[in-house]
Image (cartoon, rainbow, N blue to C red; front, side, top):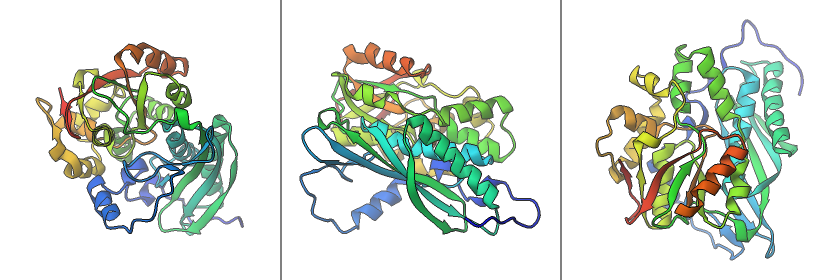
Length: 352
């Protein structure tokens, strides 16, 4: 990369993006319409997981003991610090491998940068942040692709391995299962407040800590006999990803509002109006399948809040909940909590 500088002060990274982090995702309803109209291709029997249940990654069986897990994720800046942006984006991409129960092997970088707006020094710091996250996961960045882009974009293709016997889909929840969430909600709320200069330094530090924490419990959780399904909560919010689990599993999901872990200032910031546009788009896409009960607008905002590098959502048998929680805590996920259950139903979500 030829070194260059830009004239005048560089803009804030978040000012270069129309939406940050996983809030950049196409709304669930729009994405569903796009995929519905896409040409279907023959599916080989070795493809264990494809697009059928909107799962976290594709999985291709090599033999009876090995399957390749392949995923990609990238987005525009959620924060202004280049290194933090790179760390968050890379952590988020690798999470999809963990969510399938896989172990990451290597990554490829996806880089689109407005080279007339930001310097190569800044771009280098973004890439360094991504490399740092990959190093923490024990994998190399083995290559990638770069383009000159109007908005700053960074992410990874992440490749991993999983034993097909331990593979966990988002569609295996069973009626009676308990749902456990590994990370607190509120990342989208914090990012909205950050863009308006309303996020405290303490809250920013908490946001970076949660979004750069790798979902390393995934492979260990997948091997627990009572774990039936797993996904990670990202741009569609807890409600959206719980609905994907419910629809794929042929059940309904019941969420207990009082049990939801949230970042310390999230509820207060929601009350002050710091809600992302993606939250409203999420609700417009799937709100008709959600029974809010006594939940109000603030609770709805938390349920639909887009999570960047969010936590694992695990469906497990009731007698496995302690083992699942213990696994999370061994890996440093102190906020992991039982948030709901799978009940009889047909792809809907009930809020209690």
